[in-house]
Length: 149
Ligand code: ZN
Image 1 (spheres, helix red, strand yellow):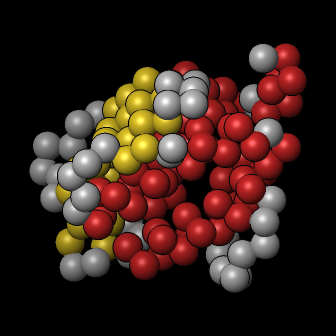
Image 2: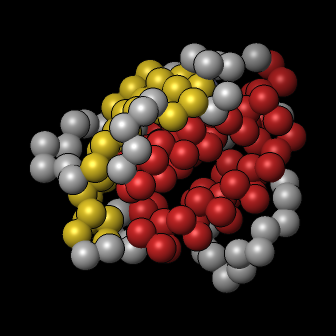
């Protein structure tokens, strides 16, 4: 794990220790489960969508620090945003953690920039994107567990 030390910046450690929106959302309109068999990260995402806007979002799960911190920060980032904006953010975030250029420009990732180091560790990309894949599945109304494999 020592090669991952530089990834574990304060923000990631803080969100892993005290994940935000870590609860079951009782009035959720959508829900999906996500699983990353490569690392063992498992999480469930609940989202309340009203008129195309993510009014509320929450998650629960277990996994490595990156998967938990990413889920926590995903909920903070997309809350109050439109579903369209949330998808654009995911595209931009995916570009950030894979180190690939995306067609998405003018997307402000803000604090999510702390995950830029993940691009150095391809195996961790799935940890960082699991929450976002699961969010997409929830919004799309998919019932099956999303697997990163
Ligand atoms: Zn992981």
